[in-house]
Image (cartoon, rainbow, N blue to C red; front, side):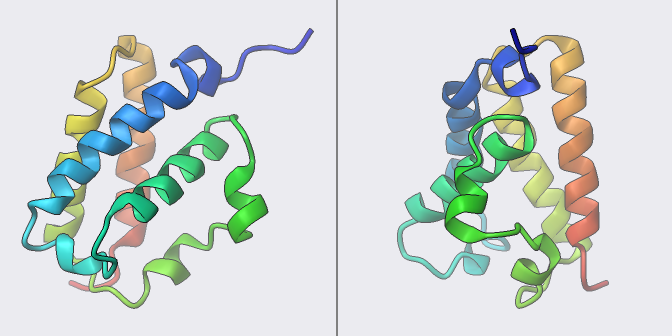
Length: 125
């Protein structure tokens, strides 16, 4: 019998979908972040982000099967990811985490990852 993954422990796809939904609800109204999403409909971006987070946390590997290696910095290189953009991104992500029922330990682990990833993406002062 295999051990449960973090993905399983937090409630799987339903939990990640809720985090991503709240995140993109914020992005859709954000004058700094919204221009970084060229698609008129944010649903494809939300699905990619959902698949990425699922895979990262031990769920299905659909992201890599469909898109290959994440290459996050390369995929974000065309956009000016400034400290302000990072902070706004984190604000919307925090809202997503606040919308789900994670334990304090689970929340801290997810939030630490989000902060690390957001800082890693900054490519302009």
